[in-house]
Image 1: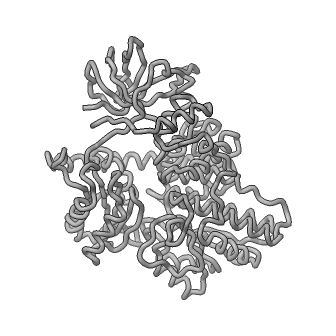
Image 2 (image 1 turned 120 degrees about the vertical axis):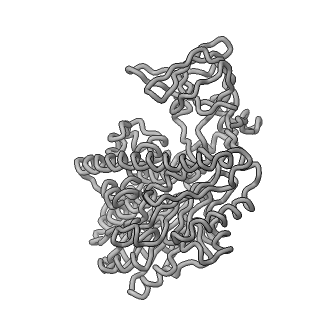
Image 3 (image 1 turned 90 degrees about the horizontal axis):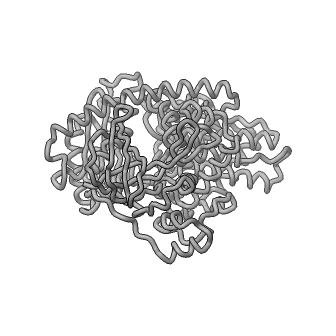
Length: 579
């Protein structure tokens, strides 16, 4: 593991300091290409206007017509946290807007069971939706690849609105409107919008359309009340936190901290031991998000969506308890799968290490759970520093794995290899191999036949070799350089923790050389350390590792606020040791 320092513009750093930004934060921000203090304005007024999102206004006009005419609207969701929050935003907003116009808004939702129907607006899902007799199908966080599903909806007399953020294929569905910042011809500057962000923009445009028509008979709904759900879905989907997404997350966190969060999100945070009034992006991504995702991974995401659309605090707390139990079960399943995968890696021996390691890995075990393979791929990617795809048997409509004959896989990639494009190359080289696929640069999903697993692994390896730059295969930890001991203060730690960090805008990570004065095991799997730098003793922790540290080490670490028995202090969390 090599530790390197991020480059930054000294001119940008000086400009930020001159504007009153703390010197430590100024350096960190300059390394993330922030050039002026104006870019730190996270007020809602700084959001990119909905009019710039292709077809948002057309979708708003269509929805306004449908809403005012009392049409039946069915929101068709995806089964992850982004899809669940997008669905909740859509259902809540459409019902609020309908009520404010004094129309009987007929708004419901449908989410596919991932084990029976798989991903997307499939013809089978459309058939299921048709039983509810909707006039409109509104997809959230999916649909851009649902060519056949949209055609089936047309045949059955249903109109379709696609809201999605995934990369489109060669053919777009013939929907009545498609809103997706990544579709051809869309000039929206924030291509990193999550599915929930896209839906939020659509309902903002709808409110503006209804306002222009003079349709509101009661007070205009405050859609900012939904920002906490937008923040949750954005962080949980691990999309890059560009300027626009940082604003969305910041607005959501402000509502949570002000005690104005939705009952379901508050309950998810509390069941995880996090106080909504002090919520951070980390809490959304690592406390609330996994519990919400657990419903879609092990059961039915309808449970998660219900937690986000209810206004009953007691019901929200009850559902949060169920989701927490599902998450505990998910952890047990994941731990067993990880042990099996690590055993397979050990069997590979030297091939799993160094330059001789494969350019990509694919793993499959008949007993694996298809709802957990994505998390497993992420864990293995972190250990191997290679793209990893993990497969499990796809369950048939009756819940039987053995009879389906298919494998469903989920993959995670490394910087430097666009995973969806890699799968696309495999699909072009062997057109019949991948039955369906989709995703992003860093995450993707696919379905193959069980008998094609070995062949897929060979073609994946070939494509990854062709598409991965050699330098991307060497694990490197980027840091923000050394930190003067004068800045090891509670004030600086709190200042850093108060910012919005996430994918593409990483939390500060510093590096220094320390003397290790003492180290002891605590909590069975952590090391409590006392370090010395420039004559100053520092308290530190090395979580999740029992490997003894050398007397002198170069390490990457985070400056954290440690609270114990009501007292707050500074602690260094050691993330990586060079060697």
